[in-house]
Image (cartoon, rainbow over the protein chains, first blue to last red):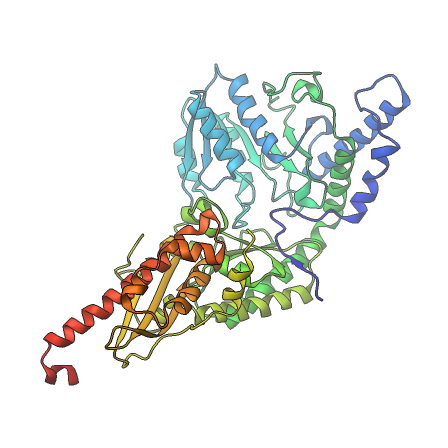
Length: 405
Length: 138
């Protein structure tokens, strides 16, 4: 039997076996606490952590001491937003972000609003998922303390122009945070050139282990300070107390090293597979629509609406293929993807969207198999779809009188 | 989400998929749901003059549970009188297919589809009775 095809690399990535190998000694053998300053076990662990810090810093052009280890990007996002708002509360309380951000940003903003600690502007995006820089500029007030805009979107892969945003932030004297979870390790990041002050990273999105992430915190020009969320032993320059996850951190560092060394060839190969997938689907099926930006997008991301075929039913037919759907039926909320809605994709098409996430371990053969299976299932389900039949008969589905529940 | 074996069976081998020909008389059509809600069911019932459901067809846009609910309903209604068909409750569909709570709306929609199809058939019959014979032949 054919094994399952994994094409959901925005959700998580498999750990690279080379990364696993690097972490193994740090479980049983070199198990020391990196904060133990008075014996070999501690020194060994500390040295491993410092090496990882360097590997991570090198990938994003930062200094090692600017890397603060966390449990993942959600914690990093929380720490960045809450930490800045708290520390600089006398300077301002206004955050600018966008409606397509990850829930870790949006829900943190909502919590800050609810507790009266911040006022938040949620910028709209255009139909490709990009914010308007003039709108961003106009949203700035004398109370604005932080701009938080993601690098690459987790659903549609749209890449924000961080360099321009960073320049604007610098001009206005505002801190710039970016949730770069999907971008780091896939496309180039340079915190200096991009003018980034804080950045969230996650190991498991780049072939590292789960439960390990980092927050980049600029140390100079300007020096960024923040109030910690956890009190304790004062680890990580006092910004994040708690014993370090040494094996995870070692794996994270190794993952960054490979990502940096192999980025160019890997991005090229992944892009080639993505384009083959897109060509295969678009050439064989009618009424398919690309969601997101045609070019400013992650090499491994393809988000497509297959009109008249509900997303979950398509996933059910693709049972040996792991992809994800923006349809409501995959969640308990019954609301389709808020990201697609923000692009102006109607609920009808949002319900038919599928996200393909290609990565390091996919093959051309898998791409061809996925094209064949998706085309087959979409045709089968369209034969079963009253909407496809009505559209083919020339019924205007927009003006049809639907009987809603 | 994991599906019951019966949902999977109906999804993979849907019963009575399709549409009756437009020229067919004695057919009642119910279309319920809306594309932006993620579910649309079209149920067609072929009903004898005596008021017995002789055949059924469906087409559904929706998740696997919606497809299974409508597929099951086409089996369920065949041979039933209109009065009996109108007695079918969504809970019967939920039970048969072991639908989880988040999928109960699929069964409600299927129940609505039966009612809509029967009501459409009744309307057509009344329309035919009122319309002059010559006009209906055009």
